[in-house]
Image (tube, rainbow, N blue to C red; front, side, top):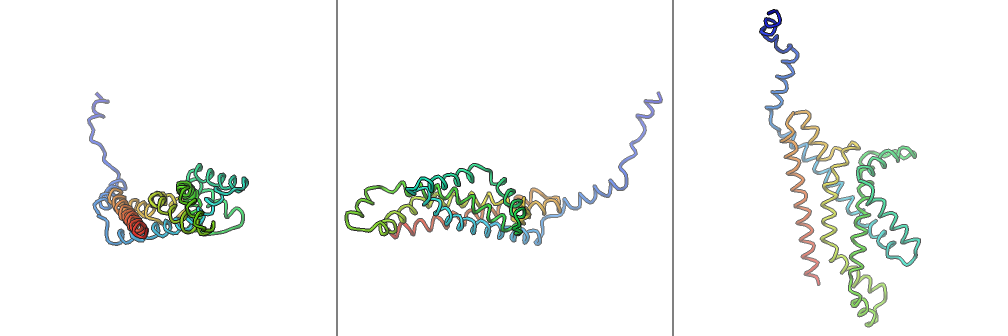
Length: 244
């Protein structure tokens, strides 16, 4: 009976501090995202767009050099290009970012996280763009090159007037696709302290207890950025086809 009576006793209820924490959580959960939150998300989107754009452009330049190395007649140069591509395609981008972020200070090069993130994204996309460009140059019909040689064009003119323009037209869709992938993969730079779009959404979600709204808004901004990028690539492709 004593045990039964103890079971029938009313529950003492939550402690005052527990009630206060629960009330605080309910207030924050009922608070929608305000203009300040959206302004922060827009700032994060600009940082994401800037990092992605610069890394893709620099990666294209480095990728062109690596592609040239891979197509070289010198075996050592081809091997160096193949090692570069194999490393940066085989190691996850997250590991590359963490390695670069911790390696540079270790060798006495103190750089902000933004520079480390930019270096990591650039070196990674350069490897993929090198393979894209190599495929484009290998896809150029040999007959066009032979026709240029028959009309007396020098190797430099054949490269500039035949091989490069055709390779760029063939690889443009793949380059745009790589840019989209880098834009999405740039969300990983938050691990090195960059306040990009993903990190900003995480901070807003943790401070307002509104994760669904915060990440939905971030996803919408990623869609807008990708739509602009794909639309720009399509416009450039149409202009290149019109210039033929």
